[in-house]
Image (cartoon, rainbow over all chains, first blue to last red):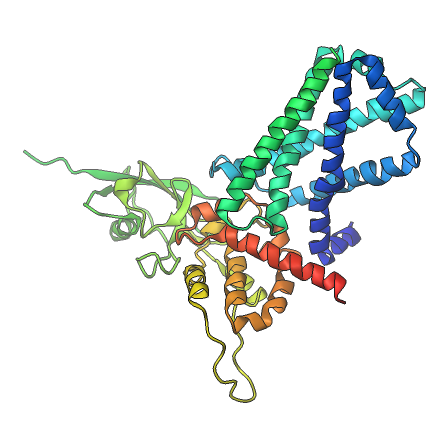
Length: 209
Length: 251
């Protein structure tokens, strides 16, 4: 534990930068790809199943999954939980817009972690253990439970929020948007991106009903 | 017919020292036109009797310049951190609550020790070294544009508002806070100060430095001197990012 703390302190700058970068690439890029791929469900089970088979036939599939998805998610999430240590919420006392975003970014991160853990377990690891085929019916069956369906509505919305607001933070954190005008404009830009992604995500979700 | 005296109700958080439990005391102060929190505290000092007639001790607080340039009288007034000298009674809803800042060790009542802020200034090397073994002569000229930016940044009085409102600044973190970071920008902007730019950037790239900022942007909202603190932080993000790349690729 002490060794971890020392490592974090000594490499603070690069670890924090890597944490911020990992949220955009590969995780954010993967999120966009994933939401769009899900939308094939709109064309019916057959098209959707074809696309899944294509993904499952990719060469170096395990390396891609672990290198670009699982390990970055764990790195981003676990470090995120470590950084929460210094958080003392005061958004009720200082209820400014950005302070709410600051609080929501942390709150959404925690909920999204639970959501992704459940999602990955259900459709990736549980199916691997039981040998159940991953296809349209599997997803539709799971989502036929309204509780799970609305958990997905919440999960997708918060994931996109965390990503879009995280992009805003990324631009500040890397010194891309410096002045208040640039930060305001990028806020509107990422709000628009977030709304589009939530639409794509939820539209695909409803296609499974 | 006797005229009914208008009074102002105060609710003040009292605490003898950091060891004792705090308690609240209420005071009714005769109203005078144009009064502020400091003049009300003076009235209490003259006659330390609570609203229900009990004699008590004088309230301890800090004040110096009385014109919002020293930062000494900073406290939490009606839930928001600000200077008490510019907190006009006419603009405040009653009862007016006075509390000490929460992010610093308490000395007594409304008085705190802001040493951590001054230590932060030392840590980030917020100065320009001009001593040498020989006469270094004049430094390079400061452009009018740099003067304008620098002037605003130089108005910082280390009052503590920015860090009091900062959710990342507390006893679990070593964060230096927005005020000290903004001084790094000021001295990195100065043509002579630029010569130690990378040295200063190194000080804020360690733990407790700029990476501890969580972008809640409360600092810029509460800064009484209207210093563009979030612009300073983002500008330093740019400087440290570029310097970080330089460190990776040029060594």
